[in-house]
Length: 344
Image (cartoon, rainbow, N blue to C red):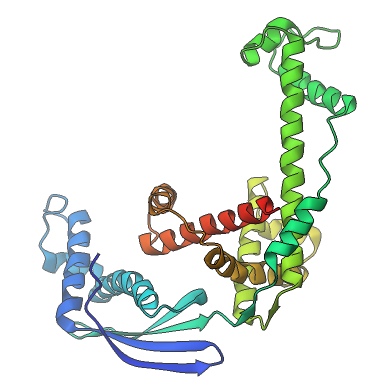
């Protein structure tokens, strides 16, 4: 995709690891985006006396307002241009770029400022040595015990028992039969089902042990990393932790504010409790691209495209460029974690 024609009015450092650009998009170029924004409103407009999408642009503009159309056009330009600019400048930045409009008016150039916090200098620890020593010392998870197997079977019996129609429940305890397990999959009898259940429990145990081991490797890497951590990055991680926690609370059927009232804490109280974890997460996020470059780890473009398309199906108003960047970082993080887990 061709980059929008623009010029950089100024480029300067406004603080430690902070860079500011002022960008101008010419009046003629910006007018093309204004017209596209207006056409979008016209296509959706339903005005008295006109079929949908057939009202004159002058009437639509009067209803919507010139400033709203200009703001939509400006957002389209900014979403496309900012990431292209930072990529072109090969800047490693952290957090979200901050954008502020300086000129937004009809028949005028669009001007805006972009402020980014640059990634700080970082001393990469001996990640291979740390991962190798931890992986070699890893103790295989214990085998599934008879008690664990019995508890899993009891849970399945409880589910099957609750699915029986009213009136069919037996007075005696629910007994698992060959007929029951045949409905759960391609099992000949209870013995075959029980063996498969035991294998699944062992796989789950091994996966959880592997996950714990990787988290311990990350902890050691973070502890061995020398860095001056910018506060903006810690705040960004705190925002992510709060968003994740709030989502979990609401998924359990409770509003976040009601939960806070119940535990008698404020958002600030929780953010203080989360700060240590946020700092660790922030350091590891900075380590990821360094390890990836050192080990030639990258994410195939087709994977980024596929996952970005899937993400946008659930977040239709999001910028494709921003979504693609998020997807690439997420997939690269997983590649680095897999690399650390398999280094021996």
